[in-house]
Image (cartoon, rainbow, N blue to C red; front, side, top):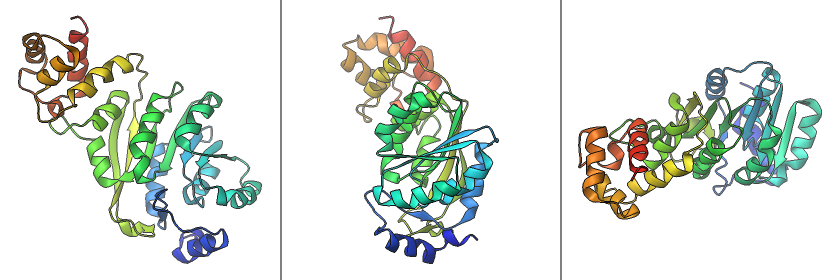
Length: 276
């Protein structure tokens, strides 16, 4: 195992750069090569690829990517690491670090990613949903997204009809997610409270009607205890019997709840309701 992956090396670097692993930024550093290798394998990387990384930290994933691809664009919020990365970029010429909050900076930088790009990142847990939404809604979309997230979140993202959530509908509307591997908490320093998982989102789609689609879907999930027809008829002042009829035509059940509809069924429902 490379020395920079060991807890002792990470502790030394944290001391040198006056860092205490931040719960606020979800700074749990990988100390195992196995998840990195799984992420790289899922990325199906080529020497012509541009890879976007979010939260490189001390570069455990970044330095593994660099020799394999044309360019790595890494978004880092921790300004205390500027000196560290300035030094590393002298050695790794194809790494570009963009400083700031990725949730904001991705919008500004997306126009620069004119060539197809991929996303590989070990995401801080608390911004997972926001980062995914940002990436999926960017005008210039990535070819594939490979991210490490909290295991429970990974399972929610990949849920099937019957256990769907607004998050799973949001991701599956744009692409096809799959859990690549589970990653236990012992693979990190400091060890988080929960296990993680790597997911890959592939077969990305452009969705010009996304705003209208999610206008209806968000309303459908507004009150999970209510049946979909009640949520939709109340939100859009529609005749309840008409909405029920649409749900029967699409799902065969007028009493269906939001979590029971697949993305394809939501698309059909929205298309029919738009006509009212």
